[in-house]
Image 1 (spheres, rainbow, N blue to C red):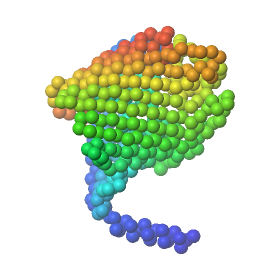
Image 2: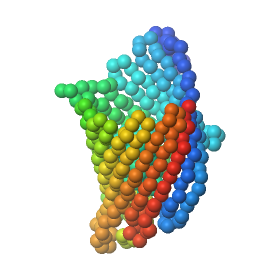
Image 3: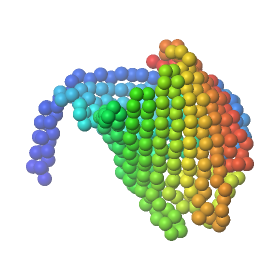
Image 4: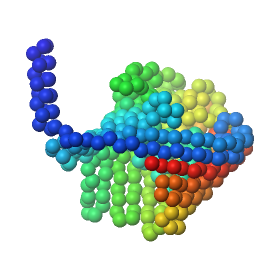
Length: 366
């Protein structure tokens, strides 16, 4: 055993000599935002009126270097707003010919390239409501994962990029430096894949993710593995960008009872009381008035399908609708952005009051 360790260490030392790193560099970037928001919150306590000023600040450290064979690496980490800890971290290794590999936590995973991919000049619709299931697609792959992105490929003039991801514990749980996430009594491994196609101003993406459900409880095969999916298409022509996206989220969880929630009860994503699945579609258009000023408009409609075969009777589907108008103006490192969003049937509850939120933000970046 000792001899084996010596051979391994010797081989490792030799490889480090053969692929020695050039001098790297460390950069620091960051920003601060001040927001003023008012309206009715999209929380479980529907109808509450909120008004207030908020601030946040972010600092990110990024180190990079290059090996003799042309392989580059990047190490990044970002701090919490309180500066008392880290909110994300990653290591990326990019080879000259075989694509790149990323390992980290809170990076967005592969899903970050495919969810809610419609044009907007400020925030995604999920900024107002946590119940926008399109934003939850594949988010269980966001921590303690490894991703692979292929090099840029081209077939008959069409650009192709492939993304693959794997996590041995797909439960979106952040761990400390060097941690592995530990075991979990509900979920096992997760995997994801996406492909992006581009041709001149046209771009399309297709994504799917699945994670193992290791709690075989419920009636029959009511509990099954979770599957999420999304696809989008965007087209840019001059100063205008338009896009359309669809999403699907089936948590694979069984209902906690045989009684349907109905149309007048709040739903919760990935909760046994809200069995069934969520389907959504978004459309958006953005216009760059000039190099400093831009506007966008987007709409979303998501439907909760209760899957009445698990309940005592048929239950009508419930749709949650959203729309948003946004504007953005930038002056060097300073920007002023605003949105006005509206939600009908928040939390897929037809008895809930409509939600209206307006926000104005001042951003400073360095």
